[in-house]
Every structure is written in structure tokens, then in C-alpha cells.
Amino acid sequence: MEKILRGKAFVYGANIDTDQIYPAPLLTITDADKVGKHAMEGADPKFVEECTPGDMIVASTNFGCGSSREHAAVTLKAAGVSAVIAASFGRIFYRNAINLGLLAIVCKDLHGHVSRGDFLSLDISTAKIVNETTGETFQAEPLSEYMMDIIRHGGIKPMMRAMTGKKD
Image (cartoon, rainbow, N blue to C red; front, side):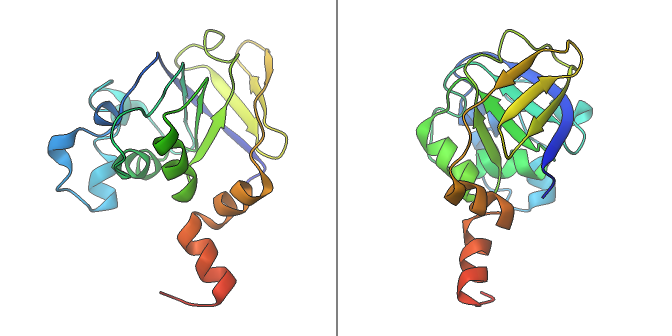
């Protein structure tokens, strides 16, 4: 995994719930390629057209509130989102994201200082975020070493496979 992630920002407000990230009527779709084509559909129908691999989501408070389904994190990862940076997360979404290998970063000060399309860089080892469009720098909350290990492995299942030597 790259130490510094770079991508364009997609900015959302507070209380973006899991049904906005991946609408409930689509839950029967399980293929990752197909799931990713519906990312953020309930909040932003143009997201999938404009998102390129490595782009980041920036949100206000309580991103990922709602259901405990893993689909929300799966769809963002499948769409190529490299990180979700929010002032706060729905607790279950946050753990699902980390466990599935999607970087979820808490930064209370970023929202309001970034616009859609701004180019961001995120140093994952220091949790330093730079809005390269405006030149502003922000300090996010670093992930624990255990969480970083999960992210480096691409999720908790691959990490456990690596630790145990099992393939399935």
C-alpha cells in the first residue's frame, strides 16, 4: 500500500446513511464489479461517472449511519475510493470499512475546507491531509497499528489468512 494517497475529493454533508451509499433495493447484487457501479447512488447519482480509482470521500458527521450491512463499505471500495475522511462515522460502518480494508479516517476539521474536485493527499502513516488545491494542511486522527495492519493486508480476513498460513 502506498504511504501517501492522492485523489480528488467528493464532499458530502452530515448523516449520509448506508442506504444512500448503497441503496437497499440493490442488496441482491453481490458481484463486486456490479456493486461498485452503484456507489453513492442514493446521495449522488453522478458519483460513479466522476469517481476514478484513488479518489476520496470527505464528509461531515455520522457518515455511514444506518444499517449494519457491509455493502456500503464494499461498494465504495469496489468503486475505487481510497479513503473516506469524515468528522465522525456511524460506528458499525467504521468497523466494517476497516475490516474490509477501506481506509476510514476521522478528521474533525477538514469538512468545510474542501470542495468537490479539490485534490487531496493523505499520508497514511502520519494521518496528515493536504488540500493541494488550497494549500491547507489538516491533522487527522491516526489509526492504531492494529487497524493499519488490517488495512495493509486489504482487510481482516486476508490478515488472518496471512497470520495463520491458511488460504481459505
